[in-house]
Amino acid sequence: MPALSFLYIIMAETLSIQLENQCLRREITSIRIARGVKEINLSLFTDDTLLIGGASSIIARRFKKVLDDFLAVSGDLLNNKKCRIYTWDMPNNIMQRISQILEIPV
Image (cartoon, rainbow, N blue to C red; front, side):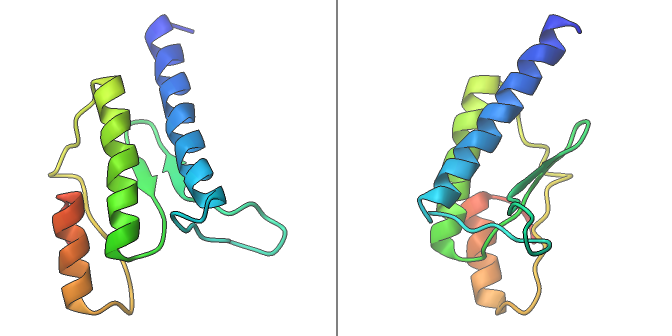
């Protein structure tokens, strides 16, 4: 395995651990797919990351902090052309506030 790939795996795992720690402290929420299955708040793909959690300004700020810390350490940048916020049953004003906090379009 090339050193760069190994480093990315370690950094991605660090992001996952940070989000999981926030879930354990009940600072952010995640989703449960099925009973008896661990909750999820992050899904990593080849060059994409999906953050999954509750929808509030407070939680958005906490996600933003973890993500900003990860980007600062990794040197990665967000591609705002690919970033999106998806939700359902949420008032538009809350959705817009979360969009502003995360600096990601709805």
